[in-house]
Amino acid sequence: MMKTQLNRTALVTGSGRNIGRAIALELASEGYNVILNGSSDRSACESVASEIESIGSHVLIAMGDVGVRENAKQIAAAGIKQFGSIDVLVNNAAIRPSFDLVNDEEAEFHRIMDVNFHSALWLSRTCLPLMIEKGWGRIVNFTGMNAQQGYVGKSAVSISKHASWGLTKSIAKEYGQYGVTANIISPGTIMEDTEEDELAENRELLRKQNPVGRLGYPQDIAKMVTFLSSDAAGFVNGQLLQINGGVVT
Image (cartoon, rainbow, N blue to C red):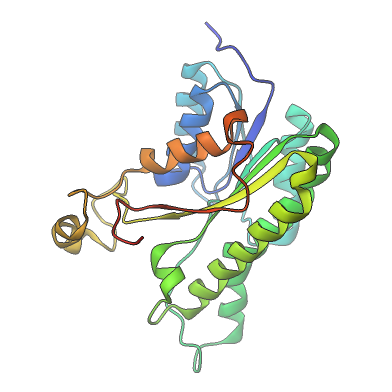
Protein backbone atom coordinates (compact mmCIF):
# COMPACT_ATOMS: atom_id res chain seq x y z
CA MET A 1 0.00 0.00 0.00
CA MET A 2 1.14 3.54 -0.71
CA LYS A 3 1.49 5.80 2.30
CA THR A 4 -0.87 8.72 2.65
CA GLN A 5 1.11 11.45 0.90
CA LEU A 6 1.56 14.90 2.40
CA ASN A 7 1.93 16.39 -1.08
CA ARG A 8 5.17 17.87 0.20
CA THR A 9 8.64 17.24 -1.11
CA ALA A 10 11.98 17.23 0.70
CA LEU A 11 15.43 17.61 -0.86
CA VAL A 12 18.17 16.10 1.30
CA THR A 13 21.71 16.74 0.08
CA GLY A 14 24.34 14.12 0.81
CA SER A 15 21.68 11.49 1.39
CA GLY A 16 23.42 8.30 0.27
CA ARG A 17 24.62 7.33 3.73
CA ASN A 18 24.93 8.23 7.41
CA ILE A 19 22.89 11.21 8.64
CA GLY A 20 21.57 12.13 5.19
CA ARG A 21 20.30 8.62 4.57
CA ALA A 22 18.57 8.50 7.95
CA ILE A 23 16.92 11.87 7.31
CA ALA A 24 15.67 10.78 3.89
CA LEU A 25 14.18 7.57 5.28
CA GLU A 26 12.59 9.29 8.26
CA LEU A 27 10.96 11.94 6.06
CA ALA A 28 9.76 9.25 3.66
CA SER A 29 8.19 7.36 6.55
CA GLU A 30 6.18 10.50 7.33
CA GLY A 31 4.86 10.66 3.77
CA TYR A 32 7.18 13.18 2.13
CA ASN A 33 8.32 12.80 -1.44
CA VAL A 34 12.11 12.68 -1.24
CA ILE A 35 14.81 13.95 -3.58
CA LEU A 36 18.05 12.10 -2.91
CA ASN A 37 21.41 13.61 -3.74
CA GLY A 38 24.98 12.42 -3.79
CA SER A 39 28.09 13.71 -5.50
CA SER A 40 29.42 10.43 -6.90
CA ASP A 41 28.14 7.23 -5.27
CA ARG A 42 24.93 6.62 -7.20
CA SER A 43 24.66 3.04 -5.97
CA ALA A 44 24.34 4.28 -2.39
CA CYS A 45 21.50 6.61 -3.40
CA GLU A 46 19.83 3.81 -5.36
CA SER A 47 19.91 1.64 -2.25
CA VAL A 48 18.22 4.39 -0.21
CA ALA A 49 15.71 4.94 -3.03
CA SER A 50 14.73 1.26 -2.88
CA GLU A 51 14.12 1.56 0.85
CA ILE A 52 11.98 4.67 0.32
CA GLU A 53 9.91 2.96 -2.36
CA SER A 54 9.36 0.00 -0.03
CA ILE A 55 8.01 2.45 2.55
CA GLY A 56 5.54 3.68 -0.04
CA SER A 57 6.81 7.20 -0.72
CA HIS A 58 7.90 8.71 -4.02
CA VAL A 59 11.59 9.32 -4.68
CA LEU A 60 13.87 11.00 -7.21
CA ILE A 61 17.65 10.61 -7.41
CA ALA A 62 19.36 13.86 -8.43
CA MET A 63 23.09 13.26 -8.51
CA GLY A 64 25.58 16.13 -8.59
CA ASP A 65 28.17 18.05 -6.63
CA VAL A 66 26.23 20.74 -4.76
CA GLY A 67 29.50 22.61 -4.30
CA VAL A 68 29.21 23.69 -7.94
CA ARG A 69 26.65 26.45 -8.44
CA GLU A 70 25.13 25.16 -11.68
CA ASN A 71 24.91 21.62 -10.31
CA ALA A 72 23.06 22.84 -7.23
CA LYS A 73 20.58 24.75 -9.37
CA GLN A 74 20.05 21.74 -11.67
CA ILE A 75 19.44 19.41 -8.72
CA ALA A 76 16.77 21.70 -7.31
CA ALA A 77 15.26 22.25 -10.78
CA ALA A 78 14.99 18.49 -11.33
CA GLY A 79 13.11 18.08 -8.06
CA ILE A 80 10.77 20.97 -8.82
CA LYS A 81 10.07 19.58 -12.30
CA GLN A 82 9.26 16.15 -10.86
CA PHE A 83 7.18 17.18 -7.86
CA GLY A 84 6.16 20.80 -8.48
CA SER A 85 8.05 22.32 -5.55
CA ILE A 86 10.59 21.68 -2.83
CA ASP A 87 8.89 22.30 0.49
CA VAL A 88 11.66 21.06 2.80
CA LEU A 89 15.32 21.75 2.08
CA VAL A 90 17.87 19.89 4.20
CA ASN A 91 21.40 21.12 3.52
CA ASN A 92 23.29 18.15 4.90
CA ALA A 93 26.19 17.74 2.43
CA ALA A 94 29.57 18.78 3.85
CA ILE A 95 33.30 18.16 3.69
CA ARG A 96 35.74 18.50 6.60
CA PRO A 97 39.31 18.50 5.28
CA SER A 98 42.25 19.97 7.13
CA PHE A 99 43.17 23.51 6.16
CA ASP A 100 46.10 25.67 7.17
CA LEU A 101 44.83 29.25 7.12
CA VAL A 102 48.33 30.63 6.48
CA ASN A 103 49.91 28.13 4.13
CA ASP A 104 47.25 26.21 2.17
CA GLU A 105 46.00 27.23 -1.25
CA GLU A 106 43.12 29.68 -1.36
CA ALA A 107 41.37 27.49 -3.94
CA GLU A 108 40.94 24.78 -1.28
CA PHE A 109 39.37 27.32 1.06
CA HIS A 110 36.87 28.29 -1.63
CA ARG A 111 36.07 24.63 -2.30
CA ILE A 112 35.22 24.04 1.37
CA MET A 113 33.09 27.18 1.45
CA ASP A 114 31.28 26.13 -1.72
CA VAL A 115 30.29 22.70 -0.41
CA ASN A 116 29.57 23.62 3.20
CA PHE A 117 28.05 27.08 2.83
CA HIS A 118 27.46 28.29 -0.71
CA SER A 119 25.50 25.14 -1.63
CA ALA A 120 23.00 25.99 1.12
CA LEU A 121 22.83 29.56 -0.14
CA TRP A 122 22.35 28.52 -3.78
CA LEU A 123 19.71 25.91 -2.97
CA SER A 124 17.86 28.25 -0.62
CA ARG A 125 17.75 30.94 -3.30
CA THR A 126 16.28 28.40 -5.73
CA CYS A 127 13.71 26.90 -3.36
CA LEU A 128 12.54 30.01 -1.48
CA PRO A 129 10.39 31.60 -4.22
CA LEU A 130 8.01 28.61 -4.38
CA MET A 131 7.99 28.29 -0.59
CA ILE A 132 6.97 31.94 -0.34
CA GLU A 133 4.33 31.46 -3.05
CA LYS A 134 2.84 28.47 -1.18
CA GLY A 135 3.09 30.18 2.19
CA TRP A 136 4.92 27.23 3.71
CA GLY A 137 8.50 26.00 3.76
CA ARG A 138 11.21 24.52 5.95
CA ILE A 139 14.97 24.92 5.65
CA VAL A 140 17.30 22.93 7.90
CA ASN A 141 21.04 23.62 7.89
CA PHE A 142 23.91 22.04 9.78
CA THR A 143 26.81 23.24 11.89
CA GLY A 144 28.75 21.15 14.43
CA MET A 145 30.21 21.18 17.94
CA ASN A 146 33.79 21.54 16.79
CA ALA A 147 32.87 24.09 14.14
CA GLN A 148 31.17 26.26 16.77
CA GLN A 149 34.11 26.11 19.12
CA GLY A 150 36.74 26.48 16.39
CA TYR A 151 38.52 23.60 14.70
CA VAL A 152 42.27 23.22 15.20
CA GLY A 153 43.67 22.61 11.74
CA LYS A 154 40.26 22.92 10.06
CA SER A 155 39.65 26.64 10.12
CA ALA A 156 37.85 26.70 6.78
CA VAL A 157 35.28 24.20 8.06
CA SER A 158 34.59 26.34 11.12
CA ILE A 159 34.28 29.48 9.01
CA SER A 160 31.89 27.79 6.57
CA LYS A 161 29.67 26.47 9.36
CA HIS A 162 29.50 29.87 11.06
CA ALA A 163 28.42 31.30 7.72
CA SER A 164 25.63 28.70 7.58
CA TRP A 165 24.44 29.87 11.00
CA GLY A 166 24.33 33.43 9.69
CA LEU A 167 22.36 32.31 6.63
CA THR A 168 19.90 30.45 8.85
CA LYS A 169 19.21 33.50 11.01
CA SER A 170 18.83 35.73 7.97
CA ILE A 171 16.28 33.44 6.31
CA ALA A 172 14.39 33.03 9.59
CA LYS A 173 14.11 36.79 10.11
CA GLU A 174 13.30 37.71 6.51
CA TYR A 175 10.94 34.95 5.44
CA GLY A 176 9.20 33.81 8.60
CA GLN A 177 6.34 36.15 7.66
CA TYR A 178 5.70 33.93 4.62
CA GLY A 179 5.41 30.71 6.60
CA VAL A 180 9.01 29.71 5.95
CA THR A 181 11.17 28.67 8.89
CA ALA A 182 14.92 28.08 8.99
CA ASN A 183 16.82 26.31 11.74
CA ILE A 184 20.27 24.81 12.14
CA ILE A 185 21.30 21.60 13.88
CA SER A 186 24.61 20.97 15.63
CA PRO A 187 25.12 17.19 15.90
CA GLY A 188 27.29 15.63 18.55
CA THR A 189 29.48 12.60 17.89
CA ILE A 190 27.43 10.36 15.60
CA MET A 191 28.06 6.69 14.88
CA GLU A 192 28.74 6.30 11.17
CA ASP A 193 27.44 3.53 8.89
CA THR A 194 30.89 1.95 8.77
CA GLU A 195 33.53 1.27 11.35
CA GLU A 196 36.14 3.10 9.31
CA ASP A 197 35.34 6.64 10.42
CA GLU A 198 37.90 9.05 11.83
CA LEU A 199 36.55 8.78 15.38
CA ALA A 200 36.53 4.98 15.63
CA GLU A 201 39.61 4.77 17.87
CA ASN A 202 38.22 7.34 20.31
CA ARG A 203 34.65 6.06 20.52
CA GLU A 204 34.88 4.49 23.96
CA LEU A 205 36.44 7.59 25.50
CA LEU A 206 33.85 9.82 23.83
CA ARG A 207 31.06 7.55 25.05
CA LYS A 208 32.28 7.78 28.65
CA GLN A 209 32.54 11.56 28.42
CA ASN A 210 28.94 11.94 27.24
CA PRO A 211 26.40 12.65 30.00
CA VAL A 212 23.90 10.15 28.57
CA GLY A 213 26.56 7.44 28.33
CA ARG A 214 26.34 6.84 24.59
CA LEU A 215 27.17 8.33 21.23
CA GLY A 216 24.55 9.54 18.81
CA TYR A 217 22.94 7.67 15.95
CA PRO A 218 21.90 9.13 12.60
CA GLN A 219 18.29 8.54 13.62
CA ASP A 220 18.72 10.98 16.54
CA ILE A 221 19.38 13.74 14.02
CA ALA A 222 16.78 12.50 11.54
CA LYS A 223 13.97 12.67 14.07
CA MET A 224 14.81 16.29 14.89
CA VAL A 225 14.88 17.20 11.20
CA THR A 226 11.50 15.55 10.73
CA PHE A 227 10.06 17.53 13.64
CA LEU A 228 11.47 20.80 12.29
CA SER A 229 9.95 19.91 8.90
CA SER A 230 6.47 19.47 10.34
CA ASP A 231 3.53 21.78 10.93
CA ALA A 232 4.07 21.26 14.66
CA ALA A 233 7.36 23.19 14.45
CA GLY A 234 5.88 26.30 12.87
CA PHE A 235 6.92 28.46 15.84
CA VAL A 236 10.49 27.10 15.93
CA ASN A 237 12.44 29.52 13.78
CA GLY A 238 16.02 30.80 13.66
CA GLN A 239 17.22 28.36 16.30
CA LEU A 240 20.44 26.41 16.75
CA LEU A 241 19.58 22.99 18.18
CA GLN A 242 22.29 20.99 19.94
CA ILE A 243 21.75 17.25 19.50
CA ASN A 244 24.72 15.87 21.42
CA GLY A 245 23.58 14.14 24.61
CA GLY A 246 24.60 17.13 26.72
CA VAL A 247 28.34 17.09 26.07
CA VAL A 248 28.04 20.71 24.90
CA THR A 249 25.31 22.85 26.46
